[in-house]
Length: 255
Ligand code: SF4
Image 1 (cartoon, rainbow, N blue to C red):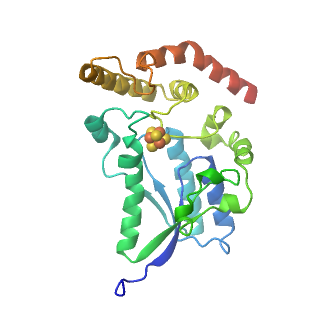
Image 2 (cartoon, rainbow, N blue to C red):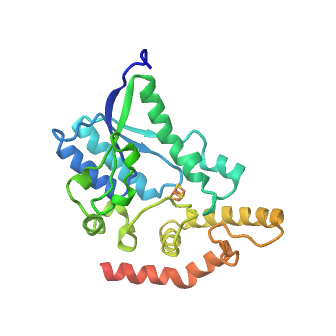
Image 3 (cartoon, protein in one colour):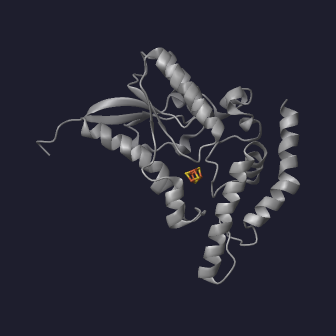
């Protein structure tokens, strides 16, 4: 298009509040000559763990100290609004990513474009996560941890003892959202132990969806497994009778 204005590159660190993003942000703030940084953006979800909100506040303070812009963007529809429309997300129908989480990123990109900028993102993928790097976008995506040869295991060792992470990385290597259809038993045990109100809320939402789907389908249904036997009631039982003890044992070993 001959009349199309050329967009100016604008460099942003995209931070989830998890271990890799905090490590990457420190690296960017300490290497401004190598990595230009116009701002830091966090896509804020109601289903982030509460400790993530604390980590993000900590990041915002660090950025303010260096005079770096920090913005938080929420999806235009709340998790509950989407839940009321689609039910609890399932492994096969994960609206939580496409209709919720990615909407915040789309808003950022659209706004920047409307004022003449093209977003270039710093993303916290490690040197041993080559499979996660999106080569189609690679001229607009940059991977400082990869550049420095930082391995995920190295960050994990560091993160286990960072108090802001609230013991999460003593039993986990990656952090997703609280109400995740891909959740593991260990995720559920962590939620039950540290955030019991959120655990109960998640189970209540799963149960409601399972009841509705069972009526629609005329057969049992589970939100987080293809085997309907492993439904919300099973999840609650197995977490309280087995996985909470496994989680406690792991945390005691890590002390
Ligand atoms: S981490 Fe889980 S809940 Fe969060 S967007 Fe991904 S699939 Fe959905």
